[in-house]
Image (cartoon, rainbow, N blue to C red; front, side, top):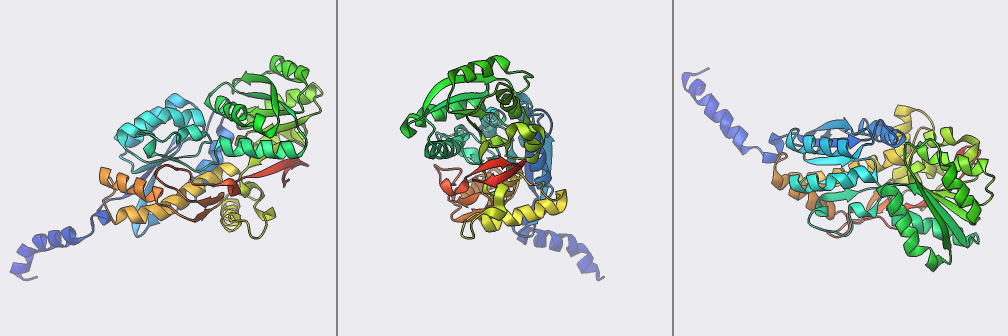
Length: 385
């Protein structure tokens, strides 16, 4: 090598590096906090399994996924979030699994100015919009959407009175609050309301009161396999009315634990759960079938659930938003996180496994009523009703 070139090579290489786009100089970091142990484990595991399916590059840029378990505990979710932002320097967070965990994360997220795509149900995560919630997005249908699905289905079946038993946490209270808002307009009167804790082993006292009120229908506002407990107690007490669940139960673990005790009961849920039965023109059918194929290829036939699909839809949104943000700023910077938030808000007509997403600065979900179906448990399987 000529003497002049040897001396000039470092300067030449630095010049080339400086000429590269800033976005190409840093890895995208996606933080993940999920409930892969604890009461919400049946939701968190398919979410974690779906993370394993996500690509490691986008637009020529490498992606690192930093995955933590929050053990279904809101305090742990906050600790994880703080660590992901301050130590791991992530550009975006997916999670948490449950409403209480996600709500607990909001202050830390706002302080760290990092976009979050939650996998939890409550509309309170993104509504009403505020400076803090401007960093929060979500993929699951809201409790409002699912409550309306239940009420519309129940009204068509002639239901006039209802009882409610839900978790004594943010999920259970938020779900009940929606029934208080909308039941009367559907000519359905609430005659009894009870609560229980996710780790309770008995709800006999609550169920005795509910059955004594003799409502036409009872709604169980709980998620995961703990929701089986009041359903089983209703069967044991001989309740003959209709039973509906919160949409946080639509997975095979719930079917396995519930067995014959949940036969004939109803769940509002994601189109993914019955993807093959969706009409050919359903807007979620193509994306839902694609996700089912990918998930079951990795985890076995019949293993798919709604909860993993929420993670997949988070990726579909990032897949659209990240390339836009990369054109504006370098990963690892506040400017990139702001650009990513704005790109997510600009998503329009994106077909995902749960429906069609049209977001804005004031709507960080973007789904409409096409994103929900009612299923019935028939022979321990989900059947589109």
